[in-house]
Length: 356
Image 1 (cartoon, helix red, strand yellow):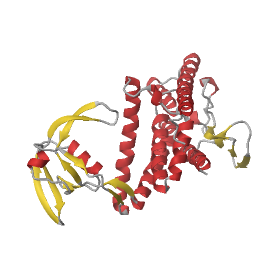
Image 2 (cartoon, helix red, strand yellow; image 1 turned 90 degrees about the vertical axis):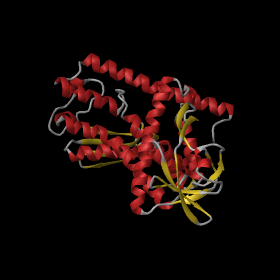
Image 3 (tube, rainbow, N blue to C red; image 1 turned 45 degrees about the vertical axis):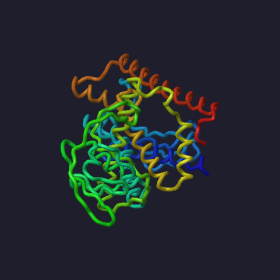
Image 4 (cartoon, rainbow, N blue to C red; image 1 turned 180 degrees about the vertical axis):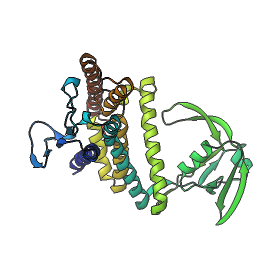
């Protein structure tokens, strides 16, 4: 059931991405010739509704929308009639091209709202250890204290607390709970060495406390879940962009790149851990799909956006040779990354480190 669930999740993510392109095209009067979930020449299911052929194809890890006038390899084959992709204003084309990724980000946002409403297990902002001669101990904080707010900002999780301290500048006001009574104290964090999520040494404000390890179910009201979902979506997007930058700079080794087998494996595991974990992982994959598709690689939506911006600025389309070479280069990069991910997956399977 886990494998089937993971394939269904990935198929739904692709469907939602293509749905964004589809609805934007319809909005601007562009004819949609085909809408397919899955790849392959064989059509498992097919139905013609109006001008669009809807189909389900056998390779579930993908899908596509075919728009009138769309040509990925030869700009001379473009149809410039009023109901084609290249017969509308450039800004409308940009919206259509970006709509798939925007829909993936929207899906992640909605999933994070659902997670906020259902509740998620989080580290509580409860102090486990106070380091001697650090700002927290000098300000009177003790083990067992629960930090309620930092500079008036409520801290419901240890992540909230850590983030508030990291963003602080100068003295901070802390409200904490001890023996069912609230107290206030003011302290000034001192800069010290720490490690970020990529294992790099960084300098950041520290107050000298360690988490107690207490885990609580944290949920939000409908009103509070909206800013929570927005923060999670933005943080996830930022993390993915940072990961790409760290990979190209060599901080993240290429051996960490995962392919479709890793995605299916981890999704399978997430389905077994419960609906909240599955929603959280699906949201992350959706953000990943949205951000990666906006990269300026000619084979991706971001590459087509780049070509469109070029046309807007220069008032001419790329030459056939330039368009073809850049498109081929984009496909080589894309297929190379997919091959690298598959190669790493095979090594993990051989070494027994794949989390099945």
